[in-house]
Length: 509
Image (tube, rainbow, N blue to C red):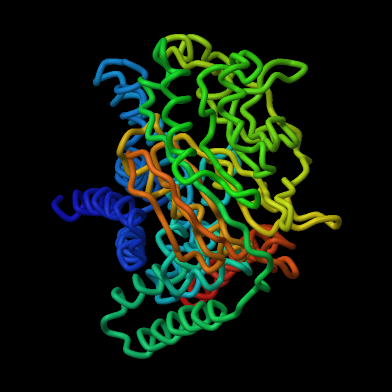
């Protein structure tokens, strides 16, 4: 009875450890957490028990990693603590379906492990984990937040990012974790343990080797001023919110001024009203710093034919010269899923039903560099970031504008920074971030955070960024498709091996 309870308690605890491994990035903890789950799966009796173990792992993982959902609903949606906790739990439970399904499918290869044939378990478990993490990135709009790969942004596996992206690293981390599990389970088989160690060594060494390759060429230097307003969400949408934001950002921008070659970047939706409703005197005072030809990039709501969009505009000499409208809208925050209008109205989310931007939009011209724009959590979707690489142009720098004020001083801020770091490595391009409450930072193409402002406080970050050029990385060219095909082939190979093994054993009996 105690052993059975342990097979459920350990996955839940390991899931919390998995959630704990993302901010700051702790690759070792992530591998330990996943290997504990896989050891428990090896002891499961059938698909149902494996599903339950995977689900409990997911609950621990997501209840911790996305606990900031509670902050958003309770602190800024003004909902009772019980309701906010219930909503956050239900969201975590939904996301937990993916690791649960991965565990259930891995159970198809568990009998082969129990009969002394671990290869099917190794291949089936790692492949099913990678496949369902990939599914989580796009099913129902997708939400691959706190994916295993982000725990490895500072580890050796990050060397694979320019080749296979986060999707491939999700698989590779699962592969190492299942090898650890088999190593632990094979305490009486020294040969098998040696094979596991050799396989882990090969994967890790490969990451170190690829991580030493410079996938880009240094290009032009651009001087950026990154502005962090530190305007709290309830303050921003107060009756005086427009003036509050205006005065805060104007004060920060005037500190030191901006030379003609400077690009000033401010966060997402810095004003709580659409830009076409902004009083002309405020617009004039706000943009007068660009009269010398310098450029200002900031987020705001812009009018489209069918409504308003969450956009980024580039201003020079007081006028908008380029704009970008967000493509991947946030469910419940920027568009209303079918049947949930009551929920949006209850939370009182302003501008909660926006228009989606076109999938093909031009990069911003910064004079001597091209910039790809990413609004809020758009940098979470690497396949969509790839859209900026076309036959005609290739960006030299990625710019992310965010407003994480909805989530307070929570894990969301450092987690989002690590997501941007992974995109920098995948595409071998520097990333500059301007966020209302953090993280406002400059990330180099190898994922190193070169400069950063403290969270939750107003400030200005002056950085000279060496942009990047050169052929697209293998991941920028090919995306997730090669990894996904490979994982499916491995999974079917694992099932075939398990069936073959079972057939041979039946013949011998």
